[in-house]
Amino acid sequence: MLCIGLTGKAQEAIRANFIIEDYKKGIQEIELTFSTFIIGIDPEGKISFIEPLKRSRPNDWGDFEDNPVPGSKNLGNLKVTYYDRFDQDKTGKVKSIEGISFDYYGSFDIHDKKGRLKSIGKMDIKYNNNFDIHDVNGTLKSIGNIDIKYNTTFDMHETKGTVKSIGPVQIAWYNTFDNQQQRGKIKSIRGNTRAMYVTKATTANDWHNKR
Image (cartoon, rainbow, N blue to C red; front, side):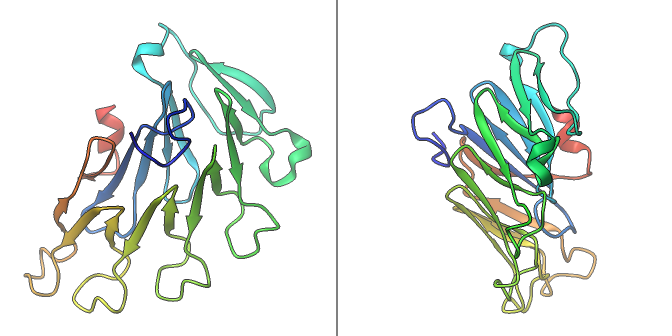
């Protein structure tokens, strides 16, 4: 069980997949699986998709779009609510899915970019900001109890900004010791588990095509 949410409760994320790509810095997408749905988070900290798990899907269910439509609607068997116009910075964004609350960075978070996901349930989402002087500003710092580390100027043979580790998973890249053509390509991903794993995408659409 992935201990990034409410341990032993329905609101806990049971699986996390972090997607990285050859020759690209940072994380390209995160897929979090809950008991009844899967949610995608893009590099900007925005919801990229929501899908009911296959076992809970009816024959027909509507597409999801994170737009300013207040109130609530069903996505398959899922109940999705949205922030209304009184919520200022959050208007139109997802407020809850199946009772799991979503919060976002706003005007009072002066060191972080407004509009990004701040928490899902009791799982906090943090980004590198001006206080993290050695990391690329705005990159994902942690999600729940999973810390993300990047290669910095101290890693003199590596490409700055590439992902070094995600929780216990270690990522190695071809670097200055390798030939020019291979530099920046993923060399290995080690430490994956069923609950938390890092996968490699060859193209930007690979992870969408496999679902």
